[in-house]
Image (cartoon, rainbow, N blue to C red; front, side, top):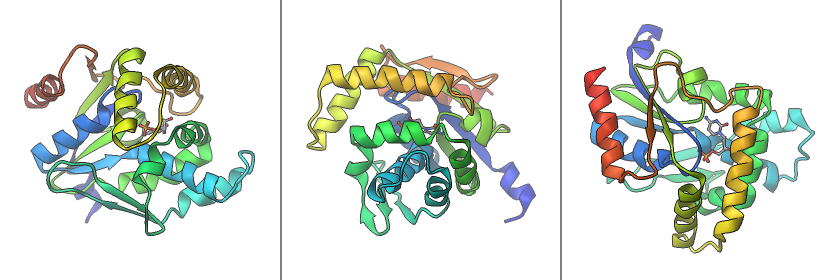
Length: 229
Ligand code: DC
């Protein structure tokens, strides 16, 4: 595909903190529009999992950068809007990616500039016709600065902890709401205040607070925004 072609491919960026509903909303939008989906958080989680599985110390930046560059990952999209399967070295790691230990490590590796650089090309390769829905923290501010439509999704920490609790227990993973709330607040703080690609709304982004909205209401607000802009 030519450079011009790639750049003319529509991108919708959905940024925001974890538990704001980004994953669900992005998946629904991608299915409705027939677009590709980039779950960029999964790339940071996969890097974290590789670090954990290979016992790489957090101060061994070159080894973590290598792990990020050479992730052997396959995303298996679903055709019915259900969650895509993610294989790391051929192993389905869907549940491991969501564990609290992986989340905490993902937030730490995401603060390493070399890791963010290592994942940049891989993320941009998802930009393919007919279009892309890109879910993350810096999709609109760093990775796809020229995206046509940018959205910033938020929700209160309490409702986000509650949503994460349901997500984990549905997968059979033990969880506690106070513990999740504490780690969400800590992770937000790290993500917002880090030097590289901090979690902030992109200029011109539609800001949606999903605390008191249903999934359908959020999807509709975004579809209206895309239609009008
Ligand atoms: O969206 P998530 O919870 O799966 O993201 C996991 C971690 O990766 C989270 O701490 C933020 C980080 N992340 C990031 O820094 N930039 C992105 N584009 C996506 C995720």
